[in-house]
Image 1 (cartoon, helix red, strand yellow):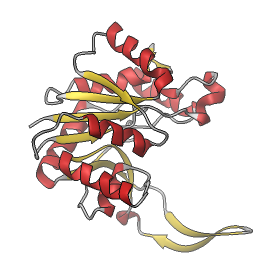
Image 2: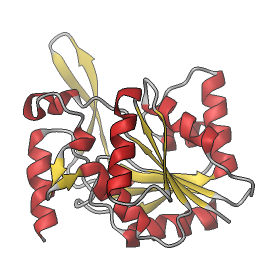
Image 3: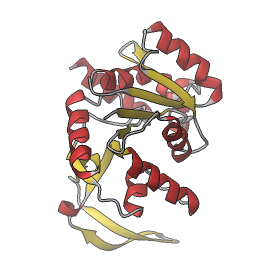
Image 4: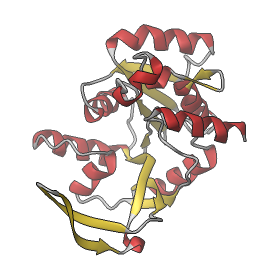
Length: 234
């Protein structure tokens, strides 16, 4: 059985552009090294990970290859073309996986969640091995309201019990044949989805939740970088 990891890193990061001079957020330095490298190292620290596939836009491919060579990571990390959407990037990487075993596992992780830890990664892999598909999620703390959008703003239509809600994080994964089926069905119907779990759910594949933490944050805005620096400092 092989374990593959996909890091979609083709995003432009418009919400961070003002703070980074337009540089893609996966290349912003955190603790002196690019965010992308933190994410890679977390998965490389898990011995059962066979290979990591990073999906990046063509203009950044040479930059990523140089980064991998500099840190001597080229033997387990592969660069594949990114797409216009997250789904396209993941689909490209899925097609590139040298998977031949129906029990092979694949994880998809946001390249800009640099503080994921090996223990959580292993828990997700164990859940996928047992159930077929799983994601990382955290319980809802705030009261959740369902609303209707009106010309005067949002109007509350219901209060959703917090015990029925989790905030989805990554990694998200499944056995490779299940993930490929979910993507194939989504592509056939031109369904995009917001994450891998939404495609798996749509294909009627049960997805289990592994507890995550606030530390596993996604760097999307300038303030997130400060929080990540705080966590990294320990």
